[in-house]
View 1 (tube, rainbow, N blue to C red):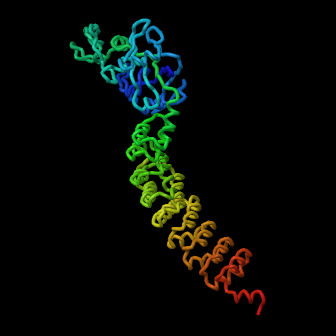
View 2 (view 1 turned 135 degrees about the vertical axis):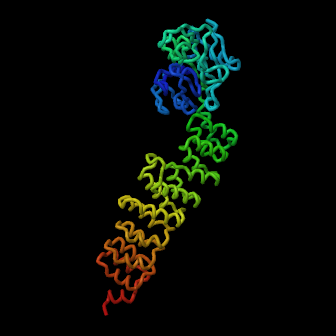
View 3 (view 1 turned 45 degrees about the horizontal axis):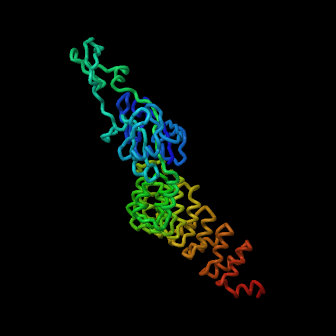
Length: 463
């Protein structure tokens, strides 16, 4: 069993006073102002969940935390410093505490939250009893003193009997309010100091959990448990596992949207998950779906609708999380996906038309090359300023004959060559291309099965 000693300090989010963190609690009251500080599961995972935990300064959830880490052989008594053998701590876990053999002081013991247990953390040792009341509360209520202390009202001088139950006391003589000074308040509420407490961890637990999450034989029930694991690699493996239940997949992406891409890689992804994932307002999720050949048409349409919402004048979302280049990446992925239906391609072209011209060429080319692009969309693409787009339109099997006739006179030889290779061209067009100034165009036209052979004979031999 590995012993990890930690000391943590941060500041109150209300008044900025020092806030020692001497127990793994979900919230904590500031001794100076009484303000509540929320310290949820995500906070503790960010601070203490690293597999290679070491002394550092951590910034999480807008809060700076100073962390000191040591790795002693055993925990120690907070009062006299005597060692508490690991075996004795584990044996006393059920009783909730163990007595120091040196001074008799009781050291608190308890199991950590479930995700920590799954990650191999067997026991929390030596947490502060004032921050972790036995009744399960997480904020210590103000405690009245058994012997009140006399205090003179700063307004009238009357003697007040204060017991520490409230920071502001009403004077019975002048009805004024007296704010208890720090020195007096701390008599009733001593300022907590940072002190070490301990985590007992089973070595190799994370590695075993990763292996289990990747094992094809792992049961759905066990995968549901492992989905709560602190290690991101374990959760990623669960997200990809073909036996992971749908409810577990939903819970994973709700808790951490970065796992959505892993869920999308699940070979047994339930059909009902596609609307959930496509409806996420997350760039990397939308871009991944947009490029997946196995994505259902409805999911691809939802992605296009998400982009349309982004580009609308009444968009009220977070602009910083999804910028112009991100929009372009999603549109390009849709245009390059062979599964994207023609109706969605029309929407992509319309949305692309709202972009500035410098952003449009690559996407227009992808649309021009897509097998599902309808003829009515190819016609406007044929008028693109970019020769690569016009060349792709000329090569597209769905390009209407009148558009090909127009492109046969294109100023760029590569476009004319692409037209010359097409079947169904009129004899006049092929004859003209067979006399083109560019040799590549001439050769392509004369090699075309529709090229008028009698004209070729006359060209070669005269007469």
